[in-house]
Length: 278
Image 1 (tube, one colour):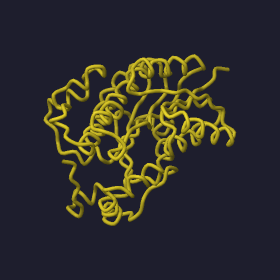
Image 2 (cartoon, helix red, strand yellow):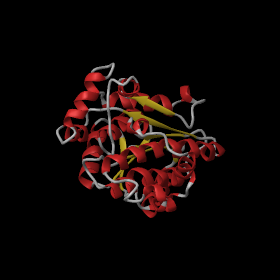
Image 3 (cartoon, one colour):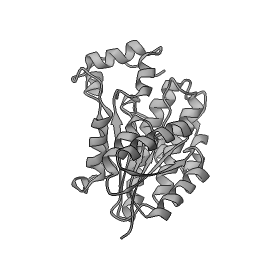
Image 4 (cartoon, one colour):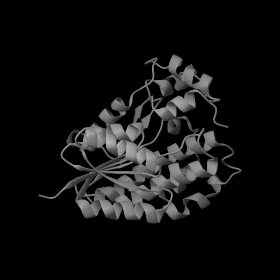
């Protein structure tokens, strides 16, 4: 019997939750740049009874992502991919965020789109920030959606002058995630596979705690207070959404984005919340 493989890129809180939810009966290929985080997550999943193979990966490097894809398909049929890796505005410079969150996602879509098994599916963890980005020029959206990954960072709309700070880079990268996945749904569909994005709001992970204790703490609290849910989300809630999109009940869904934010974007649209990225 052929081994079924689920690839989880990013071993943080959301990646661990998805690996735990989706790993039963499959081999989990767990990948991250940080070897300490990777070892901790792999040990946690193995303790829960999952079969885990760990691989270090740098999603900003095509060679690294390519090697990960080949290693995964060498194990068995890659039936599910969850791309959760990324940098936040408090962690990195605009250039680093664009390299990882934007170009890195494009590389994952291109490389895994060549080896995903027929009938397989993927989810890319984007962010509600992609819905906060002001409307882009149609030509800019087409460029973000379809420019080959290796050429993306040379686009004029991604110059330091056009993306002056990490918050702007993050919002633009997450908007680009939606566009890239929608475009990738066509080529993935040629293989009989599906791909969607999930845009979480404030999910309580170690990274979120860091964000919420930093310079933007008041802004995060405003988002929570003005949202319909009035609370943060959990990694298990994101994993539940991922399980749906990766599973047979979502067989007619591809190229779509699922917003899981407790109503933050609704509050923004109703002018109950003001968010500024520039």
